[in-house]
Length: 395
Ligand code: AMP
Image (tube, rainbow, N blue to C red; front, side, top):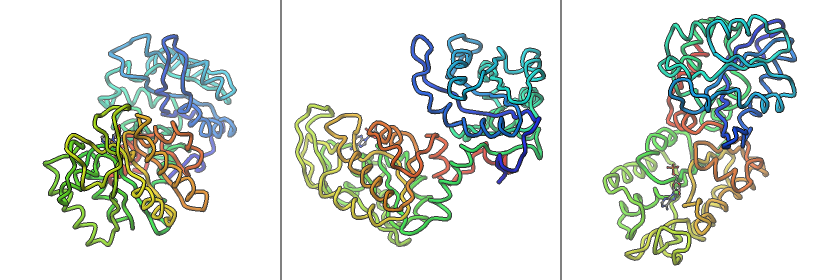
């Protein structure tokens, strides 16, 4: 696996695919610079080597050229984060981009206009990729959030740099963190899978059953399992067409010696609302008209014991409807257990969409070993798929 440290960038132009798809307010101010900060170590290393940096990214989902999606809006923010001036090319290919790239000197940074102003980007067009490739000497992919897409700048472009391509530090860290969970893990390994539906997590569950010792299943998925096992789930979210699948998973887990932990009690509500009436009930005895929206206290106690005994922890998906304060407790408690276990030496990886949002919302980000930056990309890796953006560098 080639990383930045396999190259000396002295007098080289590094063409870096970053993910600067940052949120902007109505005045085009960057409201969250996390993604820019995440790319800083890669950029710093190249500049410190005496190289120059050409940044390519997409922003939003423009239909052709639309000023509201111009990356010029974020030039000042990038400059502030990096602590160096940032030049801007108002096109990502063609004369404007070529001129700006040619004039770039060691130590300088250039940002290209939004790649998605060209439909060729998402189409993975070869000619477009070739034009982008002509701008730099070494291709660096540091955009984990788009690594599962075979777009021009994330994948197709790599073939124009047969020996001059590598992972940036962020992408390398993502791969390394996942390997720490799925490949070189320290046992016992525990996966916590929450979220709403079994159907959206089934491939993840199947893939990681081979790699874990314990699996905690929570969130809305709980009720498909409970109903399959003969429990009464009331109005809880439940996929009736997945009952057999749930039983198959339990069977497979048993065969593979994986301990499955499902909530034993839940916070049930008489409506899907923050001010609904609530009661703690046995997960198998949810009254008609009521629905389970969070894990109950006994379940949390059980989960805590598993988490505190684990040396490697993967967390994907909330334990309840954490967006509503009344049903956030289970997710917050779980986050705290993982934080505590991490403080005692466990390796913890939080990845894939909503659990990352939860960890950030509840201020637990710094207490996890690693919080992934890519929702869809992380899920696909957990499913055991090879991401095209990663494969293109390994080729
Ligand atoms: P996912 O995108 O599959 O990870 O699902 C995340 C969503 O699952 C969040 O928006 C949660 O509100 C939702 N969720 C978690 N627990 C439950 C539950 N018991 N009932 C309904 N939705 C839930």
